[in-house]
Image (cartoon, rainbow, N blue to C red; front, side, top):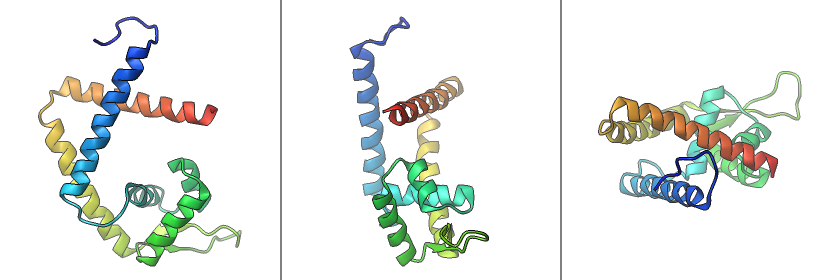
Length: 153
């Protein structure tokens, strides 16, 4: 039973963790049912963020994805060797080498987004608009709180 007071309790944590595990499992099941690519979630997220910001450095991706530099470096290296991203020269600082998507990376990301959007659309079509808005707000609040908590640690 959800908590109806403003006081945090262990049951709140249990319910949130349980719901999060269900989400993660559903996303994982989806990836295993219809993989259109052999990318990890971290690689997919890197492509999404590079596209969103047009170009990103290793340091920017490290901060945004919350992974260590070594992991981000491996992710970028694999994406670059698969020709999904390219390294660009920085206009004023030769030590900074931003990455951007190649046309091959753009095409793959478009395919990933179509599949992911279809999955989410099919799920949201079952839910009334008021509940959808609550889900969107709740997920954003939760994700922001998790990030703030991680940054404070």
